[in-house]
Amino acid sequence: ALSAAADLYESCLDADPSLQYCAVNLASVLVDTGDPKHLPRAETLYRSALLVDPNDPDTSFNLAMLLQDQKTEEATAEAARLYQVSVEREPQRWDGWANLAAALSEMGTRPLEAVHAYERSILIIEQAAEESGEGENAERDRYLSKLYYGYGVQLSDLTAEACRRLADDERSLLIGNNEKNANGDESDD
Image (cartoon, rainbow, N blue to C red; front, top):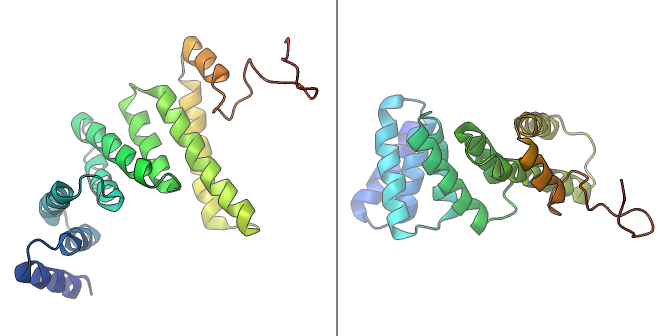
């Protein structure tokens, strides 16, 4: 089935090389084959599509995943940049935030940004579950457990100064120094 899909997208590109969706879909099919020999071509196709639309969230996300799997500093840094493009265009994309958090964690140079990305992905999933009224969901709960684990690991690696900055950040999920008590007064503890 993947071979047939690849052939169709190849025909589409042969007919009109400017059709970005053909390039992106062919790249995705090539990645989905699992054959490493197809990955350079997939990367080239994603990059050519981004030349046409550098802010396409799906293409940015797909190329970022491909790059992050390369496990090099340079590729991971570029993946983080591309995940950022993806979440800026689609801020409710929990998987974009989760992958951004993982890339930033792997880089180890922007720990607070990684923490915030973990928090954002967790909030999006939990809010969607609450809004849908959906009860237990094993797949969702597996993702959440992995995200909370990554979040905890990232928190445990923060310096004391980074912890203070995080505690003072009103966007943080953590209870900070500026927490208000039940009466709305600043807490003194």
